[in-house]
Image (cartoon, rainbow, N blue to C red; front, side):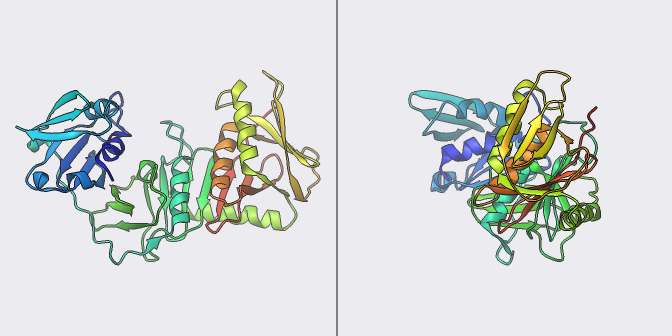
Length: 362
């Protein structure tokens, strides 16, 4: 990776106003840019630093200060003098004081990936999509773990009202399940990858010219409940207890986003199948909205009240993820009674399924 792109990536998730988030320190050394905080980091191979000048030099600076400069440069030239980083580009000159070496966390080295199983590109794409489902709102409670769950059989992301599962093997078969921050998989290169958990607890992913790592999140996931929930919904659909149909995932996501134009993320709407259309409508207690998309119904279920209360915010996120993980944007959905969750899935090489919990509406 070139120097400009590496510095952009290293400072991408830094937020000076939220010091608990993102990377705090960026360190430049021979052939590498490293961004990190106390519990996670990213090592980026940089060709521009792979020369004799950097063989005996290194400097670490505050990520928030560097981020402001990176936005103004395109082809930077770097120099280290007296533990300060000098940056020049197109007539602009900047100086950043280096951080005292005594205040820096210990450097980390990536593990040997030579015998680590390869995670295919489709699975890497699924991991990236799962990282976008996680609800980052603190205190949302419920099933929300603010991370991505990795097991030898599936990976998942959950919020207080949704569960999205990608059925692929990321960890070796003898590994213990682990939950990691969603940032570990955010904006990954669309390439094959390798995932490994080292003896010190760190979870590493090697993808392209990046090696990212994170300590796992503390807390437990109800892994058995995930399997049971998906299995129950499948059994209900197979037994004729649900209305099952197919449609374009992008259409469902767009429909939900249009509903959100007149409502906030906490508003719930009615969802139902009417002949050949999936209808999303407001409950009549505020601004009116009715929208529909065409569907192909393969199994119809007659109910006294075929509507299900659902959050358009939940529906737009998971429908987009399931659709984007499919090669042709086709998704299948099933609706049951008003107290049953909505299930969405695809037929991709790496199948992705999502469960959206119903909302109570008057």
